[in-house]
Picture 1 (cartoon, one colour):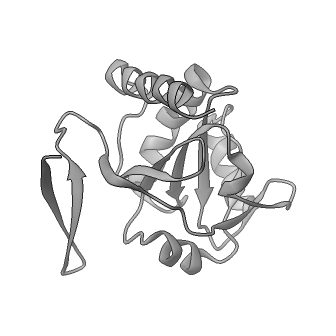
Picture 2 (tube, helix red, strand yellow):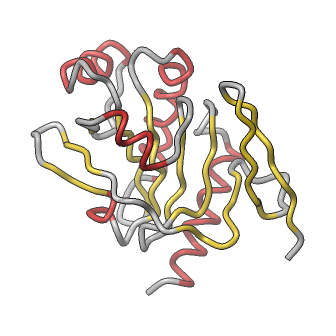
Length: 180
């Protein structure tokens, strides 16, 4: 398969990764697909969860914080994406790393009118970032129905554009066809 190298400069360090040669994809796609590390987080009721709890769905895992300007800007687009595509085959999973806890997330959702996204928080923010090899926020990982990482994107995006919705529909349909 034809590969291209993608380089990003973050905090003075250059990271290199292999990506599928598809410049139109909104993600740096993995080739091969990567296993997901263990990531523990809590829901709004304090129940401990992991990515494995969402197997069976294509998941858009977004790591964010209320104090992150680009995160704040993209959250309404993630909310609209969940409203459009969320269901038995797809889910936006926003995991906050706010140290102020679920109260900060709930206040942000109320202030910005977020209605369709669940509230999740990583109790050990640094562990979550390290486990996922995330070096900046927001970071978004696209997971297949088996909970493996298909690809990732660093930085914010407009998640509810027609092009993005078409991209996700294609991924969801491919997942339905290839994974029982």
